[in-house]
Image (cartoon, rainbow, N blue to C red):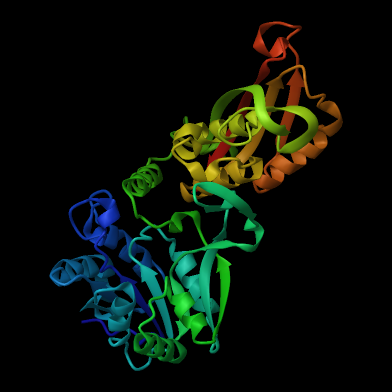
Length: 406
């Protein structure tokens, strides 16, 4: 038996949900992503982070399965783990987890098992950011165009710049969280997450940057996304020929194309820039064919599918989004799969807009969206040939390189 240092941090992993929207016929945490369950993947991330007491809150009747997953993930840290039975609501489940805390614990993280791919670095960052008087959550900017609606009509716009999408784990000083839970349970009010409950008790909640991999598995589409990310991460590195130079190791190249017809609403968006007075391109988002071709080239180079899979009409959150959103999300997908962006070159064919005067501006905007990777954009006409020569739309070809990080 290995004696481990007593940690000051505990992580309550909430796995007691029914998973009705997933439609898998079992509690969500016990549904398989690959050969392992959602709960097992969540626990793998938890135990890859800094040592902490780990409390799994399981549905009644599934305590044994939860303990097996806990021990498998914990390895030689199994002494740090415990399973408790959850309640009828998430709030009561977390309260059950709080009763199992060791006496030396001063910081408590509450983590949804459904956010199974949350990186260990995010868990550690949340824990490190908690203070004696403030809680911390990881969050991401909202990329959707948000609207107020009522009675079947859009009644107003919502400024998304002041909004963020909350993730877990959410971290808190123990004593304040326990007091906040005691007050919430006494009042009978159900809060949407622990941060809301903590704030309702009059305490400050701060935020740090979250991760795209911290998404919540709620629907079958979310489960498919998790499976895809895991399969992409497990793909073997590219082979290199004997004697290849170190600079060439792990370099992959992808090609992307995109075509959009004129006919969209508003002004033209192309190469990350708005072109007032130019006819807009039609499309699910802003029709920016340059940005979309770059996305396809990058995804193709990394073997991560194509733009339709990640940004198509089945992803309404990207409707109306501009290049910075598309390229920023693509950069996250590549980073999560272990790739860095090398460089990008794209050429579009069209009679308009006149591009040369804004070339440097476009390249700078696109490079910033890709984390500073070099971007080169050129433009050409087709001497009146084809649909682009007739002024019906724009065609783009992009080439990109990515580097597999060892």
